[in-house]
Length: 348
Image (cartoon, rainbow, N blue to C red; front, side, top):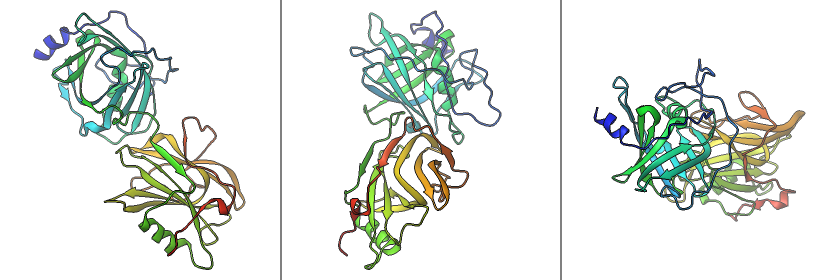
């Protein structure tokens, strides 16, 4: 009952904003929209509305991660995320909001109207557009996405942000993180380079597996934070007579280790640049989009998912899928004109 009294102290708006939210689905999901606040349900994808600038709002430019959801239904009680870092939210001064919801990402708009005391007031999310990856349980992504449409008030108390649902249905409690540190639906930080240096252990692996004095290889490289941990992965596309076949050349994905050392996680065997990071995710890892073709195969774009231990090796066969829509994808390794345009390995 204490939570009920706390919730009723928040300012609410009486009008209901109907928001359709695209969320991750699982087996047996339905297109039925949630009709009651507090009840999670997958919703249909909306058209994203333009955000309104909020430069002077106390929430503008802040970022948060989820602490818990306090339901006013005693049977449900309080739900806490197993890993709060998987649920983050950033309010941009231009009125846009970006979220990480476990293995999914969401973007949309927000609006807050402070009361006489700016530490509390009215709050609403605009339409959210979210990816639909199936996150491993336990996950709170569907709960957050479904309930976003019912948020009507905010309160800043003891350094935490409380977002309250209409009809006293519940409260989402968030704690602050550094603005820009939240992995919250924005494009992953990427850097593409045809001439950048790569770590010595990566050079040694390429030299051993794909190069010889008589048939040297070259490379193109780029980085992208594929799993949202703030430590970018290294992608290296190797070109040369020992590396490439008629179907393409290998793209290697390395994960960062101690210092400047990297560990090979995946080898995509037959690829062609551009190599892109997809806006979609699988198991908390961004999908990769590669060019395929040659060797008698049909040319096009293939999207490859992370399969738990790494990315699928051969992008030309299922479960990799051919796609034509590259909206939201970001280039990590750009296309190149010739072998000489790639970077030579440093002297042995």
